[in-house]
Image (cartoon, rainbow, N blue to C red; front, side, top):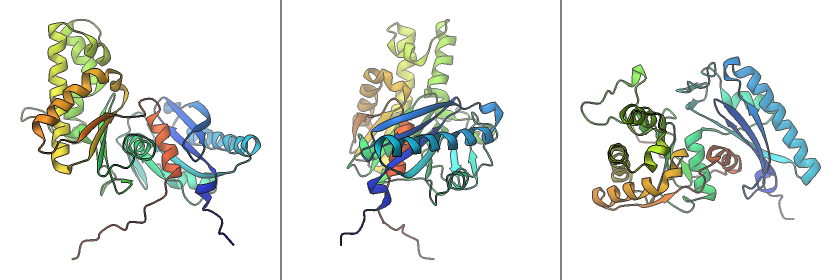
Length: 316
């Protein structure tokens, strides 16, 4: 008799994307195709309990829909949110007040009555989406860089996303940039993010240009002051990505995030820096998922099957 396939190989999955403003819960099939979704307001100021209660209700609604409309049960769940997600806490997520002491995986496992709910932060989730469905599929090692309001990265290798000893791998927004740049992370400073993050770029451009300007508008402008600001930001970003490439020797670097609406400006500048600064320049591509990357990542994580590769434990 042929054994039954594992649960996750035969059933739909639900991905949960928790953000500071909205929460999306999606039902997807094995190919990652989103079949239906429910969008909720986070109501962040009201704390995590009400949000978790509504998330669980939305998951139940989609599970019922999966069986009623598709004749298929849900066999996997995963959740993503901003910050550094550790087993008993969520750190560096200022847009989610009150979530700091939430053990997200454990709470969802209990509420959903399932033994396993993988969790990741939103950038790691974006990397999982590219690794399973997008521009990092079949690539080893790879680097995913997210450029949006903030700046972060993820390293992929052996079919996995590297999380680090404290689940904080890839927090490149804290890179020190130059000797005169503030590096007091304890005080909440993020030097690289303050130079190339979308929010910071917009603030600086507005001050220099004398009118409200977003990062996307800055990249689109051709006047000399705007071009100078753009060149400075992209030179700093290119140097950071080049240093990552020198350290890791990735096969490919993929850039996603909201700022990639300006890919025609960003990609050539970064590619030029990689070609000039890296001994073995990696291929540089735009991410497949620019919109809803973390939601697709939650789906990818729910579908994810570990490679079975055991970590190497150093001898003492």
